Length: 118
Image 1: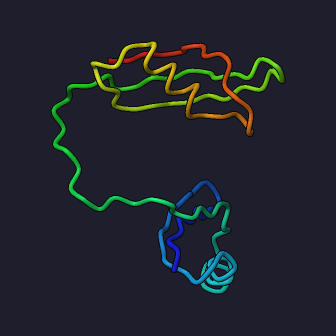
Image 2: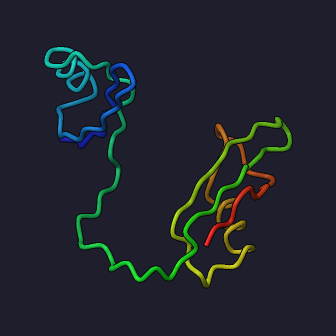
């Protein structure tokens, strides 16, 4: 059975729950039956690593924020990455973004950095 990440909202409160359900419809039915909160988002968990994470040695750039853009359609999206390797160069980061990310199915043409925080 697939694992799901479910976002529930009521008023100003937002909760993220996790669960293993038969299918998407079963998730919706379950929360409609048991909760007064509204299901606002359901994500199927494609990958999960339950091994022990590395210790925090604080040897990283704490945050990178940028706008990525497709020049043809002028569509853009803000991206935020945390705990970047200190050995990572700007060009390696930008190349990885351009090779691995999309904006609504379109390629990323340009990157405008907003914040690079230690």
